[in-house]
Image 1 (cartoon, rainbow, N blue to C red):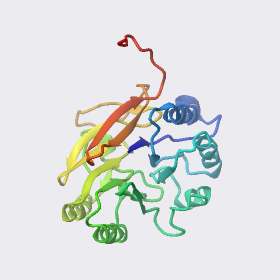
Image 2 (image 1 turned 180 degrees about the vertical axis):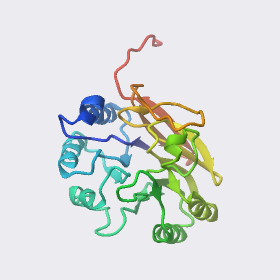
Image 3 (image 1 turned 90 degrees about the vertical axis):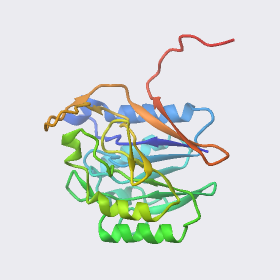
Image 4 (image 1 turned 60 degrees about the horizontal axis):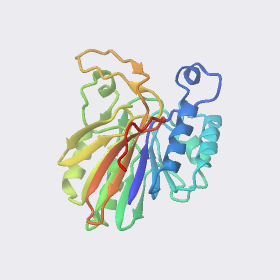
Length: 264
């Protein structure tokens, strides 16, 4: 089983300063086209938030038009740049989405449980898992305590060392950690938000950040508030479950590149 994991496409309408600088819509289209060319094809595409840059309906329409390029099932999460109600309206045809409340849901893939969490705080760059969201997670995990589980969310629960981004990270991550520690079936946690590929351990669970399909955040590990973006190559992640349930993650560049040598 393979899941293509994308994050932070920040789709925007043509002509805006943001779109002109980053070409986010074009790069998201390239990423989806890359997924469609993969062999074997992934069983699902998961996108962990910041689907659009300003949460507006027109940008979500553009995003939806690009999704029409693929017939692979797509599961969507919400980020800090998204608007919860506009998101819900834009994707009303996605039957897995809850009709009200937080954008949190679970689904089954070949006997593995996938969970999407909602860390959005309206009009704030940081995220939170409040008591209501954590209670939903705890209840969901309790009801499936024998099922291997992977969690997807936007804001990472660990500090990365990029201070400016850590300052807009997940509030009260230890409350989330207490839930993670309680449920031993959790195999991985996958996030977005940082626009870089970063790995860590969170309460004993391997946790990985998916880079953006558009620009990268500058790798800046000094203890300052410097925040910059770069034109490093765009990436997606491919999470692969083998027949024994082991998980391997590959990073995959979305832009074309030459093969320099190949065996006979």
